[in-house]
Length: 328
Image (cartoon, rainbow, N blue to C red; front, side, top):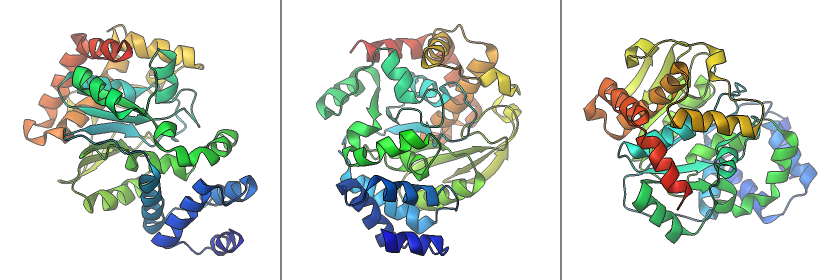
């Protein structure tokens, strides 16, 4: 590790195979906590390269517990780390998407740089995490969605988890989350917190067979916030859209606040699913869910996909799907 750190401190980057080996060694306990913390810290102060991202991704996927199904799954998630403390928009969107007929493999974790990550709110509301693939496939058949709590599927990362928690800020592991889903979904809606990362993800997904949409909100969000314009990168090109292009209103940043505790975040989550959220809250969920449905079936068109998401949320179908999953 000393050699690796000296290389990085001298502003050199790792090739793909070295990056993969470092992460494999971290997982195996080859390095102490101080060494791993130093390695992680380097990437808070410099940009990760495509080769490094690929190497880290390959290590995580090789070490994970895989989930296999023939269904055309989608994951709906963001990298996190945008520092906006929004409510759980991606997780809410996942239930809307599932209820609208698109199978979902939601990959999530506890919040590191935010009050409440997807795992925090799901756990608080009564969901029992599991890496039993039989149980997950039963949930998928019954509800069209299953939830994968990342630490259970990436057990080799247990050496890194305490360091991430103690640091309490976004690290390169935030960047890896959306590209190391153990179910390898053929469809992916992912939000990122800066344009450089959006383009890196775009390069990675172009090398795959995925149908993908990468989102970056120009106000710094890792999802569509409806507070202004946003960029999308996908199989069919790059574009910049406004809320009006989705048939939705522009809203204010304060409309998206996620509360100060997990309890508050969970209350907001349930209120929105039950149709008691504000118009702005519901619009933000519909925007992201609609984009996910569009990713899964672009022939349907973007506006019809958003309208379908809106109907699914307002009808209570998304809440019904959530209740079925929680009570399974």
